[in-house]
Image 1 (cartoon, helix red, strand yellow):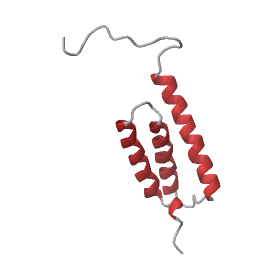
Image 2 (image 1 turned 135 degrees about the vertical axis):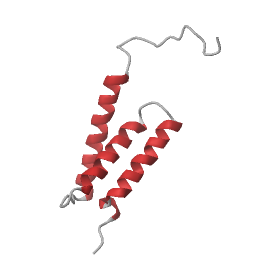
Image 3 (image 1 turned 180 degrees about the horizontal axis):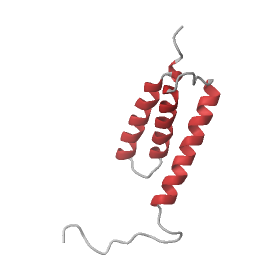
Length: 92
């Protein structure tokens, strides 16, 4: 019997790629966390014998996405209360 589509590792990696492309089109570190979560979930499914049920798999994906988003926010955000100000123009 074939595995359900959510247990297929390449579908998760394709979703990660699609979310990564969506992040390029609509930047803001929102979709990048989901892309990282989907990529790690897909790589986790490559491991033999790793076949959780759909609710467990979605919980793993959500937790990994949240962790990735929090790490990205911590690494790339400005200090609290600061705003990035550009004092030069690219055309100068």
